[in-house]
Image (cartoon, rainbow, N blue to C red; front, side, top):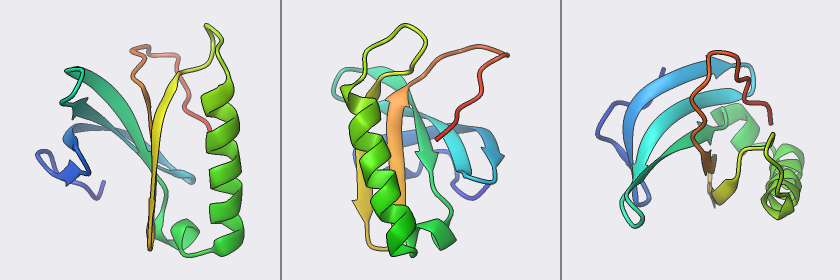
Length: 101
């Protein structure tokens, strides 16, 4: 996986890699303000440079952030910059969890 432990993504410090798939890579990171661990899903660079996929990412992030349900991880933030996109969400520890987006 591409991001090393200790790397900062905005205010979030990458702690370790969690997993990877066709839709991106997921990392455990530390959010310094509230002092909690979060999950950060980083989209592949090819997706981030596709304007249609980025528009879809932004719409989905907005919809997911508006939801509140015990079976849906809480969305804390989305980071969208030129050639990069990431979703910051609640870290849920479970061997059965699939992070889909």
